Length: 567
Image (tube, rainbow, N blue to C red; front, side):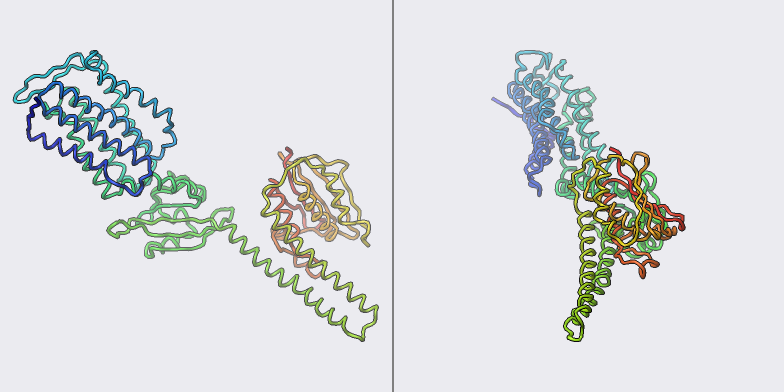
């Protein structure tokens, strides 16, 4: 018949057991999370460990103690195994927990438990064991053997490894979230130290095992984390994963405007690493906008557009305060949204509106007037024919503008083009045929290289480049126009070029010539156009991985070029 020996410590071990099972039964807002599942197994293991020790130590029967010792060891094995699995999962390294690796980690714990179940038939785990009297207590005395020490080392390795995983998370996560991870690491330390003291006979509360009592303290820590920091409802490492991978720049600053952390995108934007700017005032990172950052000290929220770096990239800068639970300001988060393309798109849209208003409205107004004249009975047939020619020319001009706009849009949006080796001589022949040079009134001289190198590209687009360059060379060349077409080696690219014999371009004109809807003032009254041709060339060449440019001394013509990769 079983007999019990109840001491005040009984109630402490009972409290640790009950608290473990309560923690395992709690519901969370993320029930599908694997981290929560591993956490439940972990605290169930500690609960079984405490329960086995409680029912075994305070009972005097040897057979009963052996049964409870198996339950205790099963809980200890589960605690060590699932502590490590939980640490890996919670710190977002779950992708490393393949089924094969988890099974491999479980091999030794399974072998150890089989040894425990069959303890009567071997002495590998315990050399000997018996029940004996110590003071007023009947104790279970055992002498450890190799099996126990091997398991103890394995369990300590799992425990320390799990703690190191959390420490690794601490070193690579924002300071604002560290308070949630540190107590978990403290809990791991409190688990391993009492157990080492007990195994090495340095137990401060002998003959009791302090390890299950440490579960009581660990349980209090976990309750505090669940209540205070919402352990599973706000997972800091997951938030930090978003922080690191978000496509916008994010900078965290304290209440004095000093930088606490920035993500990789912010490092790219400002051209400095986190270590280089950590602790620096925000105005030092954006010196040209010091006035804006000074305003942040008195204004919690701020939004402004800024231009950063030599690339002239435009960003929307937003500064928003961060408050704690007591509504005290802890710092601010600075967001940098790259709006360069949006600003350029707005600029293009504005330019497009002006083009439509001017280049399309003007010929439409003229045609409207001309068609009204056609209704007049006072005009002769010859005069009506001349008016019809002008109407046709105006319509063709509008069609050309629309075609150019459609081509510009298609180049911007088309990403699925098929790159193939180009027969550049054949493409130039097609471009010259489209320009119908022989039918023009002016004598035009075209000088071509005998052979052009073969490069990869997209023939329809490259043909548009040649049409634009050659037509401009004819339009803005000398009298008569002399057009030279050639190529040369340019680093790892081939440079193709068209040279004219016109008046050339100034340095200022060369800087603006490839912008959308740009036309030189001195040509507006002399030549027709809409300023889209060279912008289309720029879009095409950039899509093909090359560059465009112009060379001119401002006196003796221009040499427009574009480059394409050799292979």
